[in-house]
Length: 275
Length: 271
Image 1 (spheres, chains in turn orange, purple):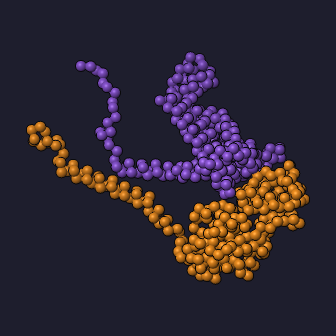
Image 2 (cartoon, chains in turn green, brown; image 1 turned 120 degrees about the vertical axis):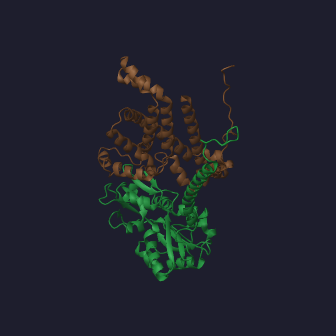
Image 3 (spheres, chains in turn orange, blue; image 1 turned 180 degrees about the vertical axis):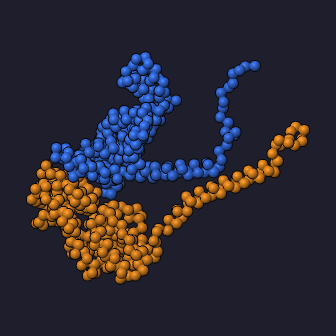
């Protein structure tokens, strides 16, 4: 800094020294900015490749009612095909169908009813195959606090009755089952999927519910199911490999395994019927 | 020479916006704007009025608005006094109380729902006794209101605290020395001074109660007309009736914008 005479002021810092300080400061703040930016953006670059993604991962979208049998099948399949990793995404079939239609990266879809599969049928490689059946059963918490004796009790207003929501396969099946038995239920809650319904019943938050026979079968006493309904409409489960599968051979291999004798045995042992 | 200075004019050439800030800020705007554009693009204009007139949509909307209003009423009635006490009586105990009351704001909603179930469900800690007395909260509209109050109350407390902080204690002290009773001081001095902030508190709490989903579906269940609030209806409609889901989403977006505008105008009246 120079004063009016052009002579350098003695109190002003030397220009070169001041410049050097501000450069160092600038370099430090730039380094800080780069570090923060890298820390923020780096996880994004690594997550572009989904974790565990490799040619040998099969992603199976399966109905929530299939958790137990498919976990078993996944383990067996992985033992028989070393190097292939099977990952499952379980939810209500209608939720999964919506996700698949929206582009979710599934290789195989296993739906709890034909209607859910129909919405994505065009996206399957070959036509879907029937691989299991399920029916509903009237179930109560242990001790039967509501003194339920049959499906007709679902019409009782004094009971807390739960069903699946009609947007899910088990809800549609519930409507058919009630209609087939001529019962108009006094429903207190429509749960989003069979898992939610089963858990509510298990937690004794409901007096009675129409749950999948397979869920009752695996309940181990936490839920008590009434004798089989004489009129019980059946839901047919369908499975198919999707067009968008990363490795269609592997996806089809899992489908074939589900349809094999071993796969069917696992399903039957978990309370499912055979188509 | 005159001492009057003209009002300062904006001279942005004297403090220009750095380019990196502009770029980053634009990214922020895009991030938020794109989902709205996506929603607008999906609106089924031809069936819009049709879907709007659906009874399922009506019942969900009416239930949502009414339950949120009741929840806000309870939250304001209990939360405003609490906020006042927390502001004027700072103590370690009150600090704990404040933390407790604000936790639901950061709690994941489904955790809140699970907690309510464990506490007030039919087999819940308190719920089993209530059930024996005939008072069952899950699967009822009352249950919905309870859940919404759980999330709205912390919002009221936090916002009302801010409003009360802005009230100069000297007004109250002056009123007291003039012989006013404590209640009169609160009702006639403090409340009017804090009113815009309290209105904002109520509006924000109402919006929060209206949007409550995770805790509602976990605790109150889902029954059209009784416990199926708008967010629940939208979530289920996304599966079989995306058009209805879009229409209901648009309604909630419009309501949310209206709330924000209202809050903005009430808070602006203070300054």
